[in-house]
Amino acid sequence: MNKAVELKQGQNQLFSDPDADKAREFFRHKSRAMVNKVTTAEDAVKRLLKDGDYLTIGGFGANRIPTAILHEICRQGKKNLAFAGHTATHDMQILIAGECIDRLDIAYIIGLEARGLSPSSRRAVESGKIKLTEWTNATLSWRIKAAAMGLSFLPARNIMGTDTFKYSADKEIVCPFTGQKYVAHPALYPDFAAIHVHECDVYGNAHVFGSSVSDQDLAKAAKRVVLTTERIIPNEEIRRQPHATFIPFWCVDAVVEVPYGSYPGNMPYEYFSDEAYLKEWLNIEKDPEEFKKFFKKQVLDTKNFNEYLELNGGIEKMIKLRAIEHLTDKK
Image (cartoon, rainbow, N blue to C red; front, top):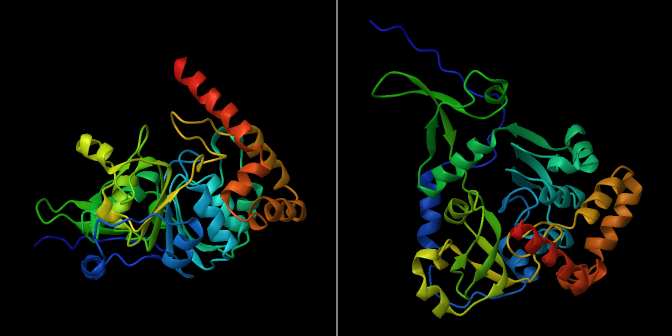
């Protein structure tokens, strides 16, 4: 008689429902019509994101992030959101400053790579006001992959025997074929995803150049998807290269044209990140009162993303950042 296998599980809370059948029921009623979806950031956030939702953001770190949507979430005062800290840097900075988040699935947060740590994000996390559950970047990618596949979990071997597993919401399972133990990563079906792309048509068929991270899976996993785009292109351009469509229209609920929409982050092959601005942000964060004034002026008091860009150098600054990115390409 085989000895019973002891199975462990992480001790922290699972912030999203991995039930694939419930998700399937939602997607069954979601419109997949090929219709014009162009709207504004204000309308997209107001219509598609509600308090308490699970929020996910595309891109990687400060690269190819949908800054216009992040600002609009703060302007509209969305609250009690859960957030996937999947390579989250400036996107998390913005949402923390807007006091929008109360639950965090964490993998990479607070650090802005070589730029340093975010004092404001660190204060928010260490205060205990935000509930935390730990994962790894790979684990969050696989959780999103499971949802994109229409599953409730994916098996893996990473993080077993680590403190990351201990503070996760994972569970060990037994392989029905070999009897070996694996960890089951629960599927992540976000309520809302915002993804910035290089170009798309009015229906949401999108092209992305450079690092894609998990954004294709994210578009399929999320219940509601907003694309912000550097430019809208004719559908004929999409049809000329059907194999290049990274995100298909049937995943997308809204399209928002926002040139320089990843600023102050980097948009690969388009424009470089504004390193001076990000450095200033990090420095001002050290003083909570000064940072509140800074954030109010930069985000809350600006009417829209164009006004924010004008406040920070406008088209002249954007042209300089574009020149830096192109110079980097040639090296």
